[in-house]
Amino acid sequence: MSLLRVTGLRYRVDDRVILEDVSLQLQAHRVGCLMGKSGCGKTTLLRCIAGLERIDGGEIEINDQLVSSSNYHLEAEHRQAGMVFQEGALFPHLTVAGNIAYGLIGASRAAQAVRVRDLLHLLDLVGCDQRYPQELSGGQQQRVAIARALAPRPSVLLLDEPFANLDQPLREKIQQSLQKIFGYYRVTVLFVTHNQDEAFDFAEEAGLLADKKILQWGSPHDLYHQPNSIAVAEFIGSGTILPLQQHRDGQLSCVLGKIDRNYIDSSQLDQNGAAYSLFVRPDDIVIDQHSKLHAHIVGTSFRGTHQVYRLQLQDETIVNCFSRDSRAELGNGATLPIKLHPQRRMPVYCKR
Image 1: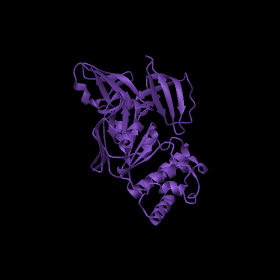
Image 2: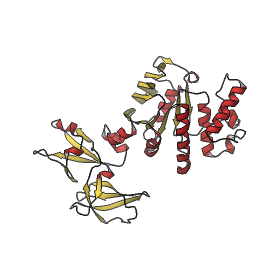
Image 3: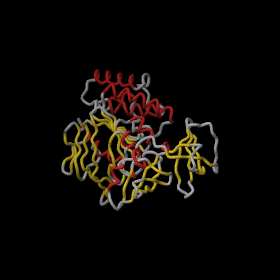
Image 4: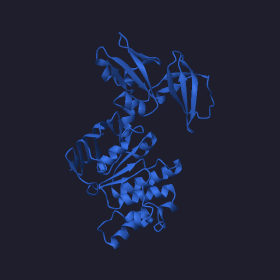
């Protein structure tokens, strides 16, 4: 069942529309992610769900209860939605224990103490209970903020770029810890990020927010392998859009050569009068010493386990190519023999 349901949401500031016809459903006890460029409205959408902003249209439901519409607004404290801001936003005058217990209004002191103790243990904050936020590291502050949001046992936890200010090793450590905690508490989580790797590492469901709406919502696997538009394809990964030719004899080709129909999604090809584009990812192009197609290296990126080469073809088309041999040190100007060798069905898009 969907614990969080957003349908046709519209939000504006004065006469400027920020979000238009936004819809998504997040299943109970799953981690969802909203991706998108900075300024696309990700944080605004979280604030609308949390009840910190009033929407102008559409509906938001949590646990099958209407919490927002154009003429109804349930206050944030009654929504069972906890929110963690990017900067943590801890109360500097309260200790760690005081911050975590802040949302436990109405609970006895004994119950508060038990809940605080449990969260300190789960979030690896034992011994920090009497320290103040300014005495903590960035990673500890973020964990305290998450503990404070978890303390009232919310139905959904909203995280606004929770790992943005952490270095990579600490980010990975905290992500692993949180995955265990969310699984233990069976918490439903929605977080936002502009980092694709972070989304794929952490999320079970994901969506891309652009042009004021969600372009696609589904599993990270679906977004990567079956993007429903060029915009999604270009954001998820580092591929290239290439013109696709359909010849009279039924053969298909692009600048990289002939294409076997078994390696493309050909459902779009029946639309008469349409121009077609093919989306090719770096791992669809391989180095092949026997290939007659050659390309010049115009850029390289060392990724540890592999190299990414930026290649220029004879017609000046630029494509990216993976090389699993990360020990090779080929520089700009070198020539590589390449061929198209799809690892999966490649998406095809049409444009009339």
